[in-house]
Amino acid sequence: MNQLSLNLVAIGIFAVTMTSLLSPIINISPLVPAIATVGILGAATLDTLGWQGKGSTLLLDWLAGFSAGHRDRIIRHEAGHFLVAHQLGIPAIGYTLSAWDAMRAGYPGQGGVRLDTQELDIAIQVGNLPGQLLDRYCTIWMAGIAAETLVYGNVEGGTDDRQKLRGLLTQLGLPIAALEQKERWSILRAKTLLQDHPSAYEALIVAMAQGASVAECNQAIAQHLPQVA
Image (cartoon, rainbow, N blue to C red):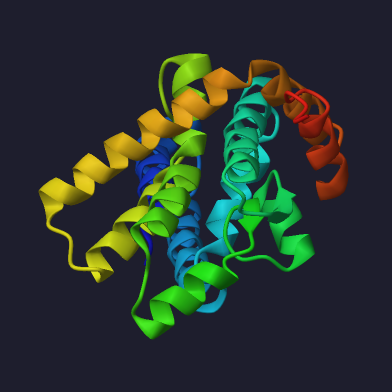
């Protein structure tokens, strides 16, 4: 069972336990908490085994969707990925801003910017991953965290991004110290790229908030970048 499902189960069981303790006072049958406990555990197990945790992700995504501030943070996080990928020459091929949108589009996970990873995948398969290519992807993966840090001063998202970076670096045999150093360096580099192009970043945020296509997002970025003579 994934951590998200476990957290929801823990919250559910706590609520059921409190209901059980208070049932004599509020005149609720003891069967109600028992049935609720079985239901919660059964739903969590089904979600983990049948949906790979997607149900709990969708539930939390739906609850968070009532917060405009949460949606704004997501857009700024994903715009960070998109802009840095654009600057480093890695094409974005799509994006979603919620787990619901990702599910409807047939994408796994909670959504986000989807990149063209063909070059990276081939390099990993043949066992010849250039350091420059690795740096580009590490920077892009950390760009959402960099964006949140710049705008809000803290980070709420980015767990999956860190897992991507650490998973690949671990696969390459890097020690923990080197892995942490690469993560910090990538965040700093991403911050610099975002700070160098604030107008392009803000234009991209507006475009993504309006549900613009990838082509339209790229156009919004290009309109706010220095023209090469």
